[in-house]
Image (cartoon, rainbow, N blue to C red; front, side, top):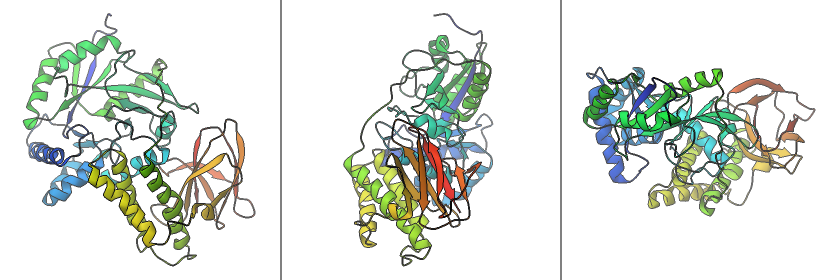
Length: 426
């Protein structure tokens, strides 16, 4: 196949954490690599960015083992030299099985990482996994327009993916030499014939001081390409710019249909149908104030559930799930479903997946989806009357849309099939 362009933009990114592993040995390997990365940030002029692919949880782990490096990490963040995948813990394998877990993973990832690193404005999934058809609309709901996946195996290196309810996102691919050992120049030569935009993202593992990656970048510059020290966010924005000018082909990505493990499903149900809605009722005085810091505790439980769903060590997963059951039991909530007491839908096809307090202040955030095959009119009535109702993105920021309130404080709207909707009451 002939090359489509005379030259390409090669976005090279230095990956400072091991691929997908969470064993004790892998965490210690990450600590050694990250120590080395921090040591080189001050005096290596070629080091523009370091990238963490596993997500914000690895930063938490690093600080738990190196608390004395808090200020150094803060300084690297202020210098904008550190970038992470947008998730709390990057999914892999069959771990994306619940829309709510996907949303919470992104929400907690952004909240955790923003102190030390730049949250990516694109959705980067570094590890191979099978993707459900709802992913494009949830990515859209966080203001992202591009999805970056691991190395392509066939077909176009870029394209568009259309989700089950019609949302479209750009799809780009990250080329990695971590497993193959191929040089940057070899990866470029192999995938250039598939590339339409002229933008290529190449991930290079961090070695001692990044010496191997820097030498490969220098060698790649001997050809006519432009080689940048970059990161997935820069590549994603370049791909979006190209897509606005030229149509990308529509990709056929076979959506994954599966079921989460019974343990993960049951624990998520306890959080979404028992603990979180009960904390809302308690916050408004209808229950004893049994949660002194409900948001902090609930976030910790969600962190544990996300970690358990992304195949961590067996004992850690069991401990995370057990913490959810023990909390519900200690509060006497394991047998009482509070979700229907907080928000009611008048249509059986509109399933409410979550009701929670905002991260700051009082109010109510509700998320649901039309599980039917046709548009339906839905009426949602919260447990108390609020002054206003807003349409929110899935990252819980306002879209600018407002909802009219009925006499009892309910809202009425048309729900399209398979479309997830988020509303905020306040």
